[in-house]
Length: 435
Image 1 (cartoon, rainbow, N blue to C red):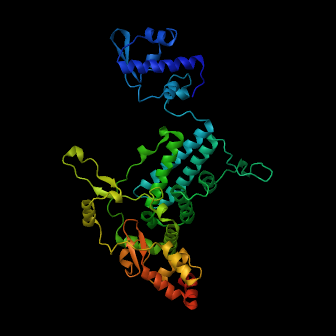
Image 2 (image 1 turned 180 degrees about the vertical axis):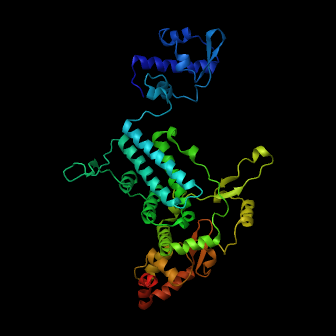
Image 3 (image 1 turned 120 degrees about the vertical axis):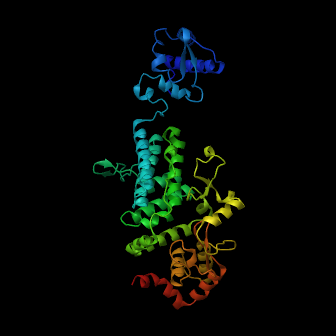
């Protein structure tokens, strides 16, 4: 907000005079507006062409009419438009930020746009890898901008209070440090989504794993949407990415089955290790966070047919699972691939299995051990392959894209792992699997 100088007060008054003209539809001359506001006649001579052309229309007999001020320009934006500073008047809707804050916001936004560009390129193989690298930069820059604006020191300090230096420059917080300052230890969906992105970035940054893309698309979408929401909440809709967030058009089959199998063979153990990480990380989350779209954005795509050409310009619409009608479910049944039985009523998430088994056998049994157990006992396959499940112990949850387990699986594990020899076999399974 500009300082309330005499000049500013006149600008503010002119704004309200123009609003009144627009509401009444009354026309005015330059002399009339100058007299009402308190400007000299010479002051306003160039304003119609240089300042006001965006919202006034010239009428016959050198009169003018306001059209387009209300709803399009706030008082702050109008004040920027009237400024003698080209930096403000040339882009009046741009929020007035301190230079360092603006630099960080611009860096954050441009990094996110580059991440989006990488992800949406049809021929990109390093899709998730490139997206996450740029989004980590985007998120760190956005949080630095917030701290800079709020006068929060985000530099690492030595014991004597001086800044730690890297190549002569102050060492600033990495994204993990920013997350701790922004959200503390509270496990919100946004925080868990960001932590997931960091861990996944660290694991795939130097690997070739294009097959991972469809398995983390929901988390990637949430990472971007959460970023845009925080960006606009903190710095205004001027910086919003929403106009850039479009669904890319894809062919139904990017690669043939034989090609995908070749890629999987090439990736070898790298892919298995990443699938283990995804399973273990998601399984350790509470149901409330895992189901929240701020952690992972999941939608159905429903073909929408219009009655006429003008109503058929959208190829798809987003539908939340809870809002699906019986007709929609029938439609999905018609177009989806064949699935194994899917159900979750009375079924258990891995975290529930782990809790029950560990209590009953009286020994450590964590998510990692559960992952090793379903591998060792061949209860299900890797990835999202419902047909690989043994229905007695495991079923695929179609809505959430993961697996749920049965009470029989718990009983099986308790019976097996109550034996010291069998428990020791499970503990050592990783080493045997890699030998």
